[in-house]
Length: 213
Image 1 (cartoon, rainbow, N blue to C red):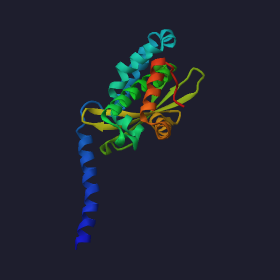
Image 2: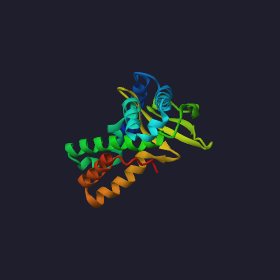
Image 3: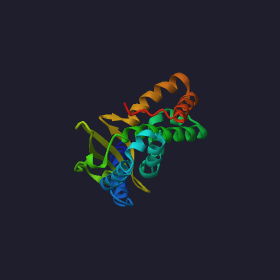
Image 4: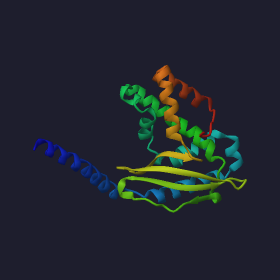
């Protein structure tokens, strides 16, 4: 009897969790993920187009636009926890906060450099295929470079109490979160979390923009 009761609970719990996620996704405030990506990406690329040469000469200008237009809709805390993985549990509150800030500044550098090459008239938002009631969505876009090459840029989204937010960006098949998680995990194992945070902070201060992958 007891075993059957536990089995029933085991089956019911995932169903209740899925129902909760569906209900939460249905009540998410603000625009849906497809509309959000279309609006913010277009706004970002149009801002870059307004003075493309200045953007190429001054990476700080691009980072400022990314900070103002895109990153308010990026779930930085969630992404930082994913990147840190198992090491998040052992990190102190101070280490967590420092890592989140360093991660945020790293996003500004890396994706600012990547976006500087794209223009608004070359971006195509692909049709969405998925179920928003799961609370998760992947929004796919294509950006055409000046040489005609089509670059896939995909956004991983999740429903939050503050609205839909992106938590990862994948450019040409390279996930920023997954790529950084692999690098950071191995480095923390070897050198410790403080050393890794200091390394990222130093790179951020140097302004050394590196494109994903």
